[in-house]
Image (cartoon, rainbow, N blue to C red):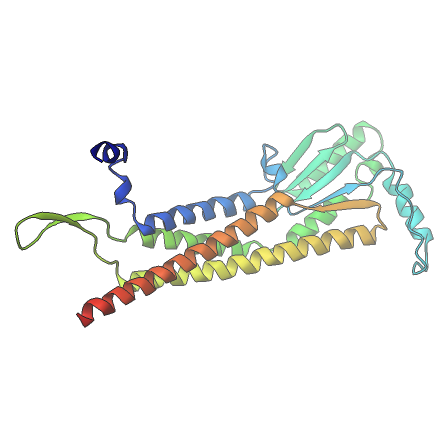
Length: 279
């Protein structure tokens, strides 16, 4: 038994319930930070996007639905979109856009105007600026980022989660006290009830803001992609960012775990206090 006890690190028994919650809070902040930073850099973050728009190949058939009163407009859009575009795909994130050029290069920036200037310069080099971005995907993606997507609630969720982390760090840990017999023993007092309630409130609000924001993100991304395909009669293809959805919903789940864990802690301490007072 002594040999097995020596294997356990000395700091392991010192890990408290609130330390695990603090780790989960750190994971939440990291996940939401990566989500917000999507499409701001071509070094890995270009794969974290909300929606992508790309030109379809020339083999796509023109829709022939009976609801089309003016089917000729679809033919004109296809003739324009099937030109040799300088860009192949545009990805939109919360704070930036990423372009994939026809040569495979990828450019990312928080300024749509800067990306458009680069694309126009590429078009000048090939003596045809009209085919640089025939359907103005940069403009469409930037409108989606500026007018539809809202990242304020995610920033609030990050701040509230950080506040919860700070409050949890103030919880008392194990320390030695001398009892009536003069012997030392390790004790861990209960944290302040007010601090626990504030931590629970901040985590609950963070969960609500995160849930609303990610649900909003999911619906808006899907709707924007579908409308873009419809308004261009299928000339462009849209995709919802899988990595961004995974990061967002994983953060929401972790936020719910933190709020539930703090609620269980408060109820457990309250029950123990009542039992001690009854004795």
